[in-house]
Amino acid sequence: MNKETKEAIRYLGYGKHAVDDHVYAMLDECFRELADVAQKRIIYRIFELSREKDGSLRIGKMHIVSKNLSKNMKGCSEVIVLGATLGVGVDMLMKRYSLTDMARAVICQAAAAAMLEEFLDEKQREIAEKLAGEGKYLRPRFSPGYGDFGIEHQGVLLAMLDAAKTIGLTMTDGCMLTPMKSVTAVIGVSETEAPCHIKGCELCDKTDCIYRRNEEC
Image 1: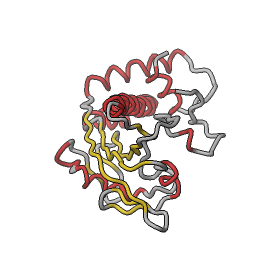
Image 2 (image 1 turned 90 degrees about the vertical axis):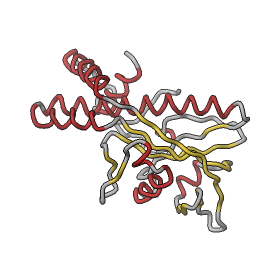
Image 3 (image 1 turned 180 degrees about the vertical axis):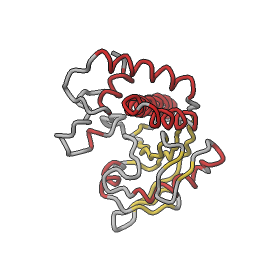
Image 4 (image 1 turned 120 degrees about the vertical axis):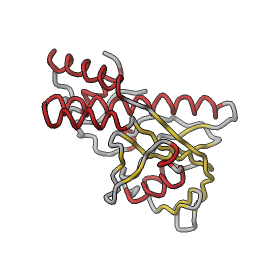
């Protein structure tokens, strides 16, 4: 089983329960369809990171009060701000299935989420390899809405990236990204190497979550 399929099954909430052949077949079909319509795009920029006396953070001109993010950024002097999307074609595919085949729509949603995560992991590895040549190391990526990092910061991140023009990524009044299968995130950059998982579950204390990743990377 490849990583994308394993990730999609996790999103479907199976946990350690067995997955039947019908679900595997539908996942394979959805991944093929998604590959045909996805337009993967990413934009990232590096900003200076500073800490205020009260422990809050400044990334460029953005001010953030978040204990979780502050812990994630410990030892960092720079931050990568990124935005990524699978494009509007994926939205259209998922909308079509939501109107015609709800079971397939659910599986397609999970497959798209897994595809986006794999795309982000791949790009993060590329960035890490590039910065390693400069003696710099990455922390796990961290997105608005995770922990106490408020979702309202999403709009500022998009503005910092000029994401609407660069990759067609925008936000609704309710702070939801559009296209739907998109993400914004920050990644700490440090001159000190530390054990670093690309994924974020290791920073979450909800150990009974059915979506939790259990394996080491």
